[in-house]
Length: 69
Image (cartoon, rainbow, N blue to C red):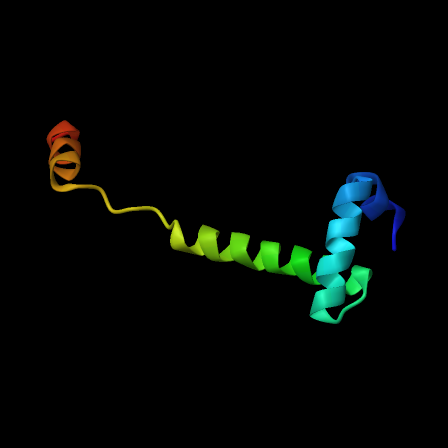
């Protein structure tokens, strides 16, 4: 286990994550890496879904009205 992980987790959190890793049949390092990867993947999916929304009818109409002739 890396020192970064031990600094971030308290004793209780570390014990909890060790128990979850044991139930999943992985080592603590593998478990934490998989957990970080899953969080990263989820963030990418959320970013992809939140694409800019098309302006509404009245917003586009006002934009057209403010354009010079």
